[in-house]
Length: 443
Image (cartoon, rainbow, N blue to C red; front, side, top):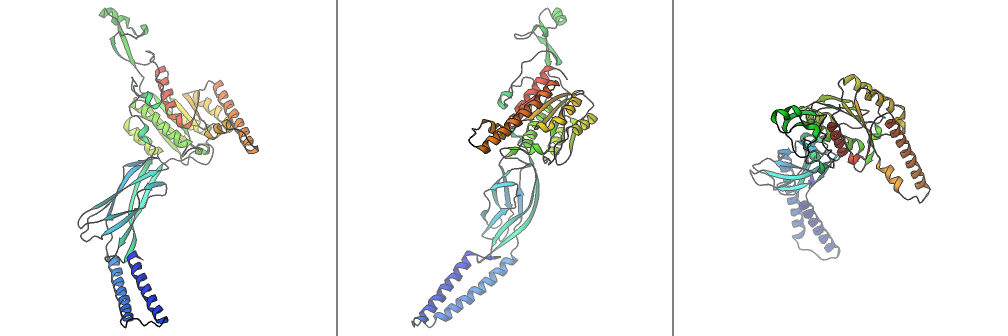
């Protein structure tokens, strides 16, 4: 409990009056006979009122609150939340609310003051923006209550537990956008590949149309119908994709507010969204992260929910990823041939393990290796060298880029495709490779 501004103003007024009375006596200017008794009476009255007001505030019940949040929060995206004050028969004239927002969330429009009417609810709205994925744990809400006479204010912490998942921003995902015609892929930066007309699942027979290749003609059906009949194909379904995601310490590198691991996770979810919409089975394995994560390939909405549940709070670890261990675990658990997408931030220290691990995986599966670039290295290569320290940084960037290119060349010599891409462009690049793989008709 603390004194309100009104009580401080009254005390200041009494103090000034006391100074005036004291100054008058010091200057031998006798004040009115009733001045001193009136001052003491005013002080006694204020003390009595303040004591009674404080007691009334202590007995005043706390308001009942209800927090309303979205079902989940999106990383780096503003969401609206609200606090509702339940109706009260004798509410205070106003109250001030400040929600106990977790430290990893930004907020705006807090605190707020509400004016209440008898038997009517009050509500305030405010904004939240999570900076990190994971679980946002709300514990309490702070309420500032005035006393009936407005002489005191009490700050109370009311327990109001709540928990929400913070997911990657799923608004950039286009669910079901990768159907056979793929009309909307240009909007997400994916290059639509031309249809080959072969190497995919047979769908149906139809009339021959302009633009169809001669290879699509079904000659037996053409002879029966006595007019050209073409075979129509669709992308093969029921294929399997495994996302092998490095969660080691190098994935903690940041290009802007988000880490390489965050970019990779969002891109993997974009690919998962497209693959599940196409009827393919998708699984994920994360190695080197703060905790182990492996989800066997599956299909449909349940698999999508399982992916979000498994990955939303996953954070990169502090040790390098073990490629050989990850390959052994993958080969032990994935018996059916699949497209394996290995996402990592490659550098020269991977020379000892990665080529061997990649060869083991490629012997049984189709492998795509994704190598994330570091923006700080690219900036160092482009900047003008004006001093000794800048020269050292430039030489280090050149050496890093050369060793990285040598590793890419060694993997390429083994017949392993390497996708060298900036983290921010990873999502469209993966979707493009997925389309190429589907169009090629090879498992």
